Length: 232
Image 1 (cartoon, rainbow, N blue to C red):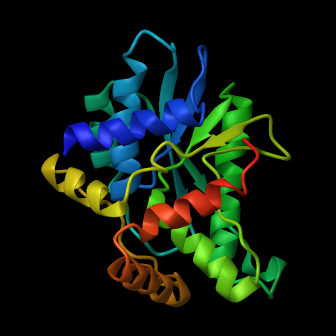
Image 2 (image 1 turned 180 degrees about the vertical axis):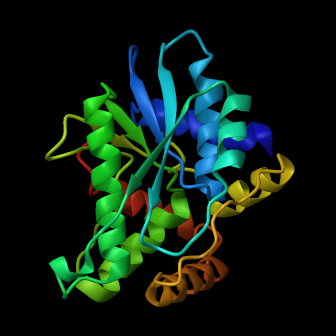
């Protein structure tokens, strides 16, 4: 399992030119299995001589949302990897736009806090733990609900910040991440948010599983279709 997930991680970093010499990278550590696995792999990668990169992690606490994350565990986890953990506190005011859901506003303000911190502290890249299934589900949701064919990209320059967003787990299927997290005894730290609206996404994830059941190469075929939409 170790060799396969590392091979896909390294393939993404090399194939999509996600890392460059001198990069200072901020890892978005939510506490979920995806971000924990990403942090572990990125910390290992930072110990390799070329390209020479440095990494720190950041965890954003949304103070007005009733969920619990074990900050002590995350600190111990990062200390074990030899990387610094930064903890940010922020909140959102849902009265600012009654048309937006709490979930949308929470995500927006988390990212605002994260990218502002990156800019203020000299990070040129921010890494997220989105895996292949996240890309494919997003593509299917956009196709079905918006009538457009697009998804996330492995690398994206931010419009309002001098920061590039990278997703080094983009080639890794979720099932591999789950197995790897169990193997390494990584503890998922998030209590589900009571405001989280996952109905459409959960249904689309089931659709992705059905498509994979129809054809074993469905995920790869859809991935190649998404690749054609990027300008990397």
